[in-house]
Image (cartoon, rainbow, N blue to C red; front, side, top):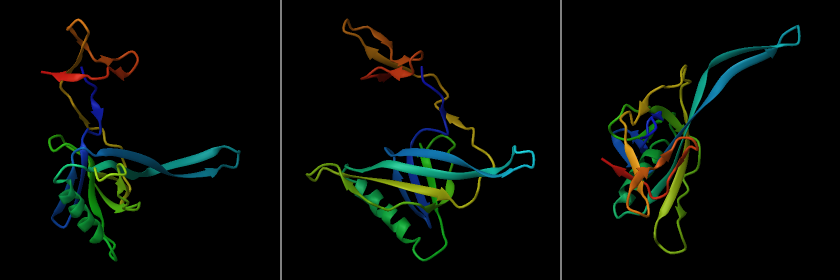
Length: 180
């Protein structure tokens, strides 16, 4: 059994002027911050008016460890370089799986591009980026992914297979595998 994942599940995709960079192993995070106007009323209580949401997204764990990952990094660097000196955005899809309907936003870069080495030997790098959407959103999306039941199991010491998702404790057994 699998959970139905809010706002999809997948890696990170960036697009600008026909250039695309996709990190299938990236971790995409959405944050919807309320934009509201609050004032004190004459009776001492609060009046509050919610206008919409600032959409913030983070794309973390963008790894450069496989032999062709550098190509995605070069594409991403070209996309970010194209933003210099202009009031333009990059299309960010923080939970891109290539199949399900996904949420994309036109965003401004809101962090530094800072590749970090994974170790003190040349085994790879990782980057994390933050973005903020150009426009306010008037709703929080409700799409989900993983709508079909999946059987995540683990093998016990006697060779039998058991359900790997423990709903009562919201945990997953270590070394779980997907069984068709």
